[in-house]
Length: 303
Image 1 (tube, rainbow, N blue to C red):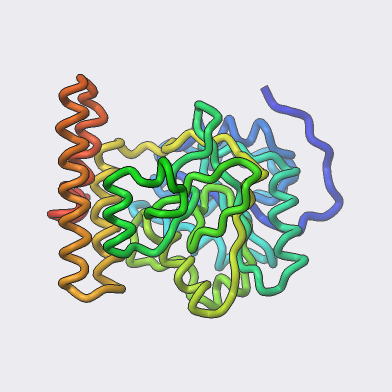
Image 2: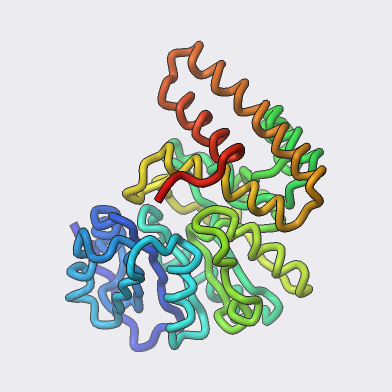
């Protein structure tokens, strides 16, 4: 059921959504947002699930067919480059931000010219902040602490951030599941790195922002429900892609010997998790860990 939202005379931003067989998720998201909110949907499934139909009654909406198979980074860049708005809000089809949350993020950018991105904290079905709301640059020490699970006792010690609600945290990169972006600065930095099909493009953006002497902000006081993977791609396919993207990122910014050390630690750590999950009868989780290892070792899955 749609929620009635007041109309605005003007909007300062456009919501950018990349869809891949995500019609059901988009239907649920649109039911919570004003009909006149500017939205662009970039369809990575070549119209297979007719997500363009969802925009018929949304007067400020746009539909872009990416041609299919472009991945998140290329599709998101397509939507952002073609926008006429100074501020962009990146969302996932399975995220559920309110207008009030989005307004806070955009207001951050308006108030601070050196701020390139401002992101909300994503929470899972258990209402806890997700692990991966951002994170830090991979180093051998951080990778080791990650595979040892040290983030559970020292939240800023490893690779990925799991914020505590209301407690400030300053990761070096932020997830784009609900993120306001200053469009001009984003494009000046080159946008998302399109050598990443999916995953690690957010890590690469954080690195570019830091190297330019600019800033980003994580709101730990704004928690947004997130479905943790609502696209049409299979979970093991996505986990293999995640492993492959991590290795690609490591290779772009580290010497080969250092890459091998970090990859070996990740493989060993996830091999242990695979064995433990199988022993506990959690076959689906074990398969996901195994897929991540496959990505680390052999690269992305076949198209």
